[in-house]
Image (cartoon, rainbow, N blue to C red; front, side, top):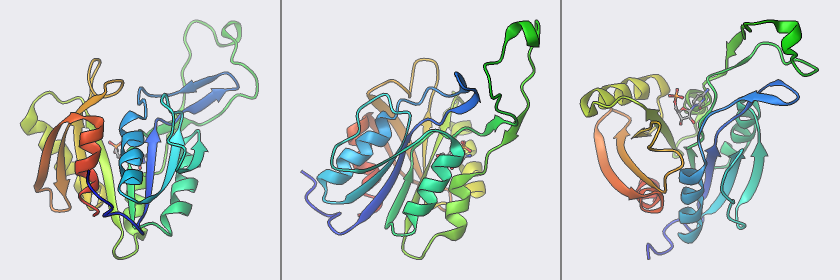
Length: 220
Ligand code: C5P
């Protein structure tokens, strides 16, 4: 096994996908299962870390040994991760965070007989949590972001990853391709890790557990 190289380290991991409510019964969501984030939490525990898992609507069970914080929306995730990051040696933003939320959340169920044949939803931008964490990061803390992209061309995928790194300013960015049939529900993943300068650190293709191991090597 990988040993206990993370003993004494506090790792904060966000996992799953946020849901932005429209009314008491509906939300805007995404297809993130939380599997990669939960694999990261399991692997970090196995290596001796203390782990805070900030869980947004997981489709898989969280390990029992984590400090679990359940969140629903992007704003709830922001509050939880900002609080937890203050004492963290590493923060891994594996969660799929909604870029937008509805401007208005209806107090009652939206009724089609009241809205008619078309319904326009007005959305407002959510804060970029990862970029915010990068701006306020304490020295020594390792901040890792994810970039899930549907771009099929590997060269253009890397360009998107480098542009994203420039916007986010984290220490490492895990670039992975997602689509109708890949990425989310799968037990496997294929990633390219970029460093702060956009240079490739490693490329891994395998189970989400083996991918987790290589990501945690970045903070060991
Ligand atoms: O901007 P984009 O969603 O492509 O970036 C993905 C990375 O940024 C992920 O690590 C995700 O957790 C994070 N993110 C964030 N706040 C947002 C949107 C994404 O921290 N509003």
